[in-house]
Image (cartoon, one colour):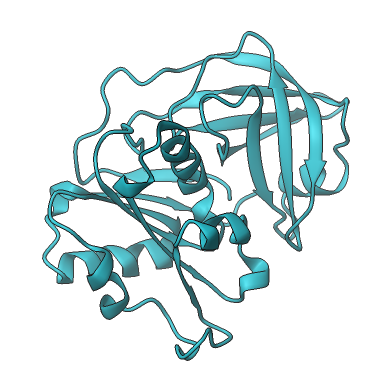
Length: 244
């Protein structure tokens, strides 16, 4: 996931923590999903994040050229390490380096946590709707809910091309997430896009709806929620673009 861009429709969480530039030592590298990497970072003088916040990673070339991208945090605040999920994008200046080159022991420049609007407060019911790697901030929310013993507060719907391409697939399925696949059938459900009838059983009055995914997915999911009667003030959308 890269370049989150919040679309303001509702109120946020006041006083969300924020951190400046720091160094982070890569403590772990995993590649459980094709064309992606999970990085576990030991951040110096870390400021604890809230579920839904993100970090910026900055790379500097020997000639001084810099490039930076934003990545949502997948770990819960209580995790001693910050976990980022990076989808490798073709020609991505940052994502290709992180996915192909970075190894344990490397030191990165990071800034975070960032963002106070696309944040779950840990006590309110929420409907989480993700497209592909847009599920990453929701993994942080799910892990936070599990630590608090309040997984009953969250309902999760995910749309992805195939289950193999879904980050954290096992964790999400075990949590009871609805996983809709657009390129393969799952059970009795044929392949197809997320539809209003998929969300109806998950929606309850009083929920805040969080949507995260590509710009096209975020737009479609937002319209589905509005069509179900969800008030705009109860919808928070974070979309990301192709840069990486």
